[in-house]
Image 1 (spheres, rainbow, N blue to C red):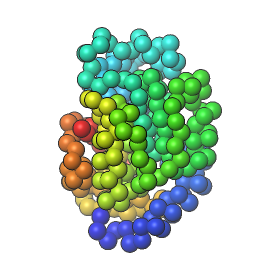
Image 2 (cartoon, rainbow, N blue to C red; image 1 turned 90 degrees about the horizontal axis):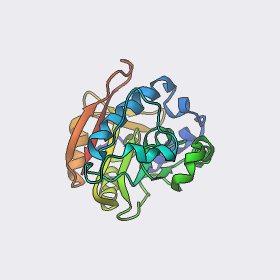
Image 3 (tube, rainbow, N blue to C red; image 1 turned 30 degrees about the vertical axis):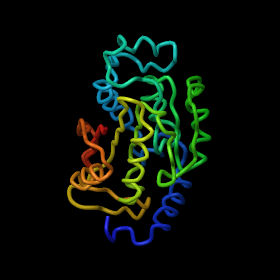
Image 4 (cartoon, rainbow, N blue to C red; image 1 turned 30 degrees about the horizontal axis):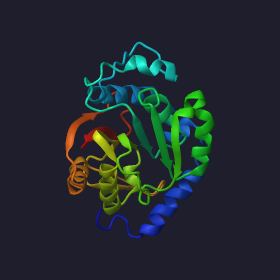
Length: 244
């Protein structure tokens, strides 16, 4: 990242201050683009399907209760990654946990730097919130996931809040927390060239070459990559990376 982050302490504290002022709603989590939530979730489900061996019908309603969970899982051994426990990083109020992860996994943990968001998640998630294992209030630069706990670690729209060094370190800690055949997924905005700072929320947007370089530095490899489609043209392109 070079000189983009001149003061690491204020880079993190300014981001925390920004998110404290954001309303704990889906629209707040998406920066006023709440209308893209369904498109985002559907794209993410299709992406995960190839790894979990999970049957997802785009014409079916979200499998929002645990009684439907077992109907989704194909015969044992057909999917590469076990749909056991997932971690939602930068979880906010649990938008991704509710719509993507809880319908597919037996247990989900949430980590976010804003306590108000996690408090809201406990009601927002509804009945299936009983399958949440832990709510961690912590910045990812300091978060240490439990070794060998997770089948999937989902990191969406939050890597821009980490410096290069902290992102590499966090990915390395995530790798150690994976179960056999586990997967790390990054879904985030990608700039067209270089690093673009955002002084409003105290974050950065990196181009794909930089992201790939940081993934490699962390000792991980990209096993699959896709660009999210059907998002508004005025926002950055969004790429999803599966890492092992």
